[in-house]
View: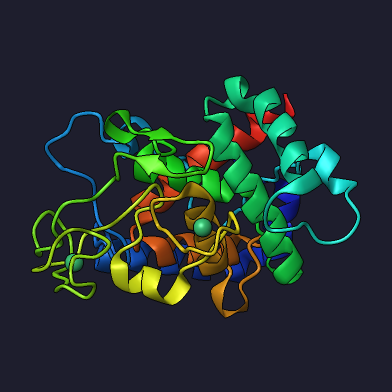
Length: 275
Ligand SMILES: [Ca+2]
Ligand SMILES: [Ca+2]
């Protein structure tokens, strides 16, 4: 996608040069380093991320995809309840209406929509959109469908999606066990867990209960989507700006190519959902 001329004008030549320099440095220094999250099984040919072509953009020079909030939800008064009642029913209708167009399970879309509403209520200045969460989830687990996994009505993804041991191979960091195997089943090392592929130590900090059942479960897509939204918005980021969006996504996984894949996926959802 070519950056809109107006935005380039706004960024200015100096800012653009700086951003390009930062992008280049980031690419050279940290490309392929899995920073916060683990990689899926490198031997599997259905690794979702490999099916998404990186977007031909320099991250940071363009803002995030401008997706519409779910239309009916924009008219809801006040903040959404975290679970049950009207908002969830409205979200279900919205999700089923666009699920086929965007090729995302309706139940996953509900989770992203609920996280969108919750984080907008908590941190309106972050300008988080559901399409960014959807872009991450596409790359991390194909929306909880990795290797035949499915999402129950409760949001629980089964069988659990557990990444490879983070043992320093395959571009991953070495991360010793922090959870006693409770989340990842591995008492020697840590592994990324769930549809948004949280490593246990990151989950320990950002654990959330998106479906309001009293349990924060990284294998539950409602919980994981809300945690991901809050994580993206950390540090007062504004995801409506190019640099803010870039910083958020690269905090998830410090790889420029990863960022461009997420952008491509998010951009496709933004376009398809408005078609
Ligand atoms: Ca572990
Ligand atoms: Ca929960």
